[in-house]
Image (cartoon, rainbow, N blue to C red; front, side, top):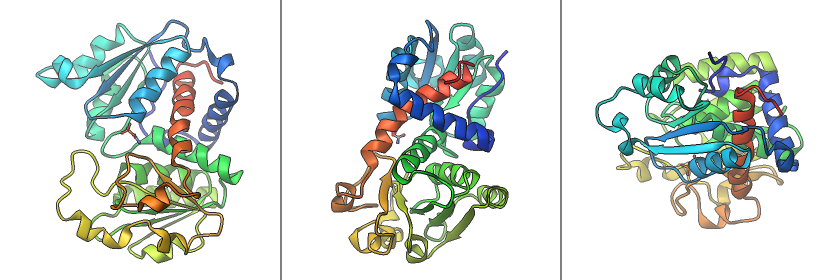
Length: 306
Ligand code: CP
């Protein structure tokens, strides 16, 4: 039987989170020494939503560590018709060493994890995007040299990415600020939990509607699409207009602040093209680090730590 799944950054203790970031750094420095970490193991990857970065980085991560990725779109499976996610997990557990899944509700992910005998990895759910959050923390640590006390301003929809950054940031003692329009705040239970985490770590969490307050003096300004996959975009351009990350807003951040986005981006909507493509942007480093983090996660789950 498996020992662990990876469904949320909140599944990790602060020291496990730190170890995973160290492992991601180690494999980035020396990928050749990780060549046999998956050693003939097959990893199933189910995508119920579109993906570019997550799908390709996991697929490349598995094959470059000696494993065999089995990428499955839901519409190719009985899962997309009438087989339950539990039965899908039970069957796949007889063939593969782990299941990576991108899906809708966190409950769906939890049902899969409960039924599967092999580790399940959340490759994005409506609730959280922990693999993205880890890559973002790796990127921030590279750019700032440390995480404790780093001021991260997340601007926009209080979505799955925001939740993962909140869990990870408050666990690592960061000063996390989230600015969202009314009605688009992070989930209250995530705010409550992250306030506890910040209390334990010496970090802080501010959730506000005031974007300028959030960005003032920040070391990093992060945004994401205004309508995540499966959400209706209608009306959001008006609701989020004051939350666009543009040059005026960036002026309020610290002089060496970096700009982050998990991608895909909509230039002219949540972020202006000059900021996304400008000198402060670290978005391609974030995208690259997805690969290193996926290797670290799979290696850790399969008990061959880096
Ligand atoms: N950021 C992210 O998860 O990208 P994809 O949707 O392309 O996987």
